[in-house]
Image (cartoon, rainbow, N blue to C red; front, side, top):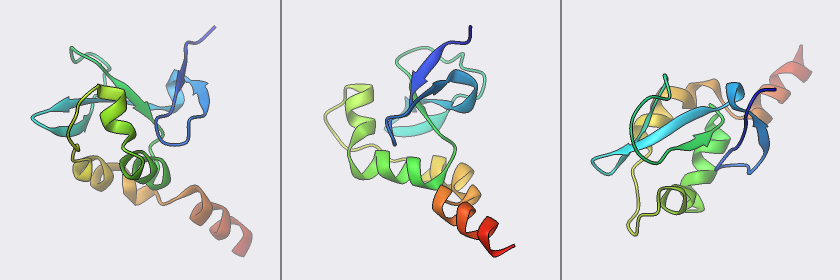
Length: 95
């Protein structure tokens, strides 16, 4: 049985393989593709919706137990190109 994690953006509980692990490095949220960096990690879907939601709700700060805001711009640039789940559904309906 695969471990289950909770996405900090949408709060859905899904298998670990469907999420990316993130860590904080110098006040910036970065992807930990191999899930091997030390320290506290947070899990998120690799979609624009979940990354933006986590940022707007200050979920990153809660997940990493930090007081100040964290920059997730690099993470959004890396994974945000997949679009939102709503945009993907709309594209599917157009075909």
